[in-house]
Image (tube, rainbow, N blue to C red; front, top):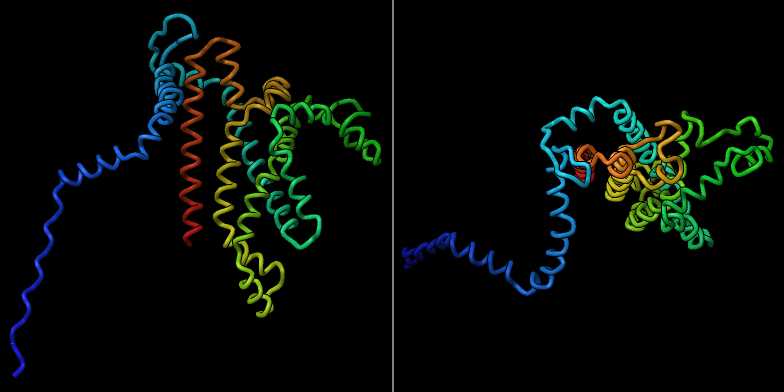
Amino acid sequence: MASTLRPAPAKRAAPPDAAAHRRRRGARFLSPPWWFAAPALAVYALVVLYPSLSGILYAFTDWNGLGDRNFVGLDNFTKLFGDDAARGSLVNTLLLTVAIVVVQNGVGLLLALGVHTGIRSRTVLRVVFFAPAVVSPVMVAFLWKYIYNPSPDAGLNGILGAVGLGGLRQDWLGDPDLAIWSIAGMVIWQFAGYSMVIFLAGLEGVPAELHEAAMIDGAGRFQRFRHVTWPLLAPAVTINLMLSTIGGLKLFDQVYAATNGGPGHASETLSTVLYKQAFVFGNFGYSTAIALVLALFVAAVSMVQIHYLRGREVA
């Protein structure tokens, strides 16, 4: 006869004790890896975190960098949003950022697609295109100041005249309508190779089998790029857009070295206004308010970007 006895149900494990869980979590933070990281974290907190967090307080004062500081509430922020020069610098910053993000990544993608082919000189071309990215931005600015020389027989103007396009010669950095776009051109020239390298890493991760299958199905070169390569480049696109956006929003070196924000205020950015208010006019409280607004703006734009772009990767 079959036994009608059933095995006793297994006992449920008791929920872990909350205190024991906290003790285990605390023990992990006291484990040897944290001992090695502690000195670096302490230095980082002392050199970066503490000055950054304490600096926020100065945004609400009238400190001039030397004497006592007096609390002025939101006066610095009211002044910032009512300052024509500051508003103009914000517009310039946004224009530069849009131009850099769109053109730099577009050129970088084209370069990556070009050197990803089987041409023999692809290694040399990769080095040549990436080389400007390792040069100091100040050196690049001085190089392009010579290229943008307003003399009709020097730099870019000289080349235009030599090829019969003398009518296109301009005062590239002295014209208020051209200065900001001339700066965008030098930044794009310097960092398009950097974007190329990131796109190349993404292209290396695209399986060749997918392209072969698409070719068998009759897909052309553009269709293969659109339906196979582009979706798999989403992580590289995310990284490039984030880096170029942050770099454009905090652009300073090239602007200050090439035009010092001029002519007039035609190429001022938030970073150059911040610098001048602090170290030229001595308005450290006001400059800290500008820095705080810039930091919050960069953080907000980055969060929106990463939310959208990460969603595109998952999709």
